[in-house]
Amino acid sequence: MIDLILAFFILIGGIVLVIFSSKYAVKHSAMLATALGISPLIIGITLVSIGTDISEIFNSIISCSLGHGDIDVGDSVGSDLTQLTLIFGILPIVCGAFHIHRRDIIILGSCEVLSLIVIFAIVEKGYITRLNAIFLVFSLLIYIWLIYNSNKDSIQHRIEILEISKPTKKKKFHFLIAVIGFAGVTISAYLIVQSVIFISQAINIHEYIISFFILAIGTSLPELVVDFQALRAGHHSIAIGDIVGSCIVDSTLSIGIGQVFFPQAVTAELAVPTILYTLIVSIIVIIVIAVRQKMDKKAGVFFIFLYLGAYLLLFNIIV
Image 1: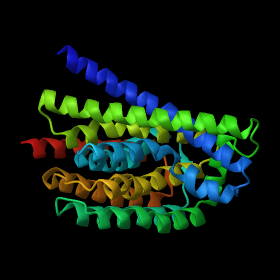
Image 2: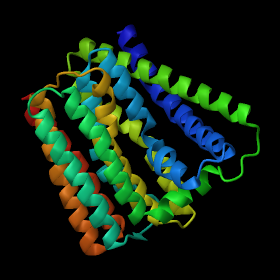
Image 3: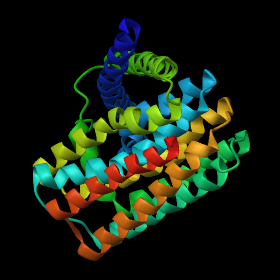
């Protein structure tokens, strides 16, 4: 029992550490890139666009290297569902209603749905080949191009939030902090994966389920923090760009990167129904937003109920 409690604390501590480490890793990497004369456009499309997904990316690499592909897929797909329903639902309840352009949600939402369809087709076989994983990773380039062209203001504003336009320290300082940040992300990802494995074995619940329903909430917190700050500052366009854009990264790079180096089998009996549910819910969310063109408390409550519906799915899977 003591070991189990300790494992839960390590899991929570790892999630907290990965949130702070990823923030500093991305910020100072971007500031170093700026100091080296790299275009803000390149920084925005790469580092800033995937910044809040660093935790899922490193979890993918660590979990696959340890032979646990279910943690990789469970965390990434679970993050998709959590961000698009729970996180998106909480924002208007806490910050008030905000407007969303129909064009943005249609373009970004279509990319998200397409990426989930690809994941479903791959995972249905029960394994992810290296070729599949490479395809997932490189497909992100197409999505990022679409994301940037439909959400330039969002990416540019995120650069402003990180305050990377005018580095105030020397290059060596930013390099050192970035290295420390990525080291922290690596260590925390290892702790997270090991704690999930231990908890799964101790309570006899599959690690995919723990990753999809518990770990995904923790690794989705950076999106909530970034979007909460942006909405409070009146920058509403960042919400849709960050949340859906993050879901696209999770469905491509976050799942694929670990599998590129360490291809792993996936428990299709668990992955397929959860991916299918996430896909259906994504389509519902996109249609609701495209029709209403705003997020308010009513939509927020509805999206949270869509998230809770996944627990009914969990019950049916277990039974």
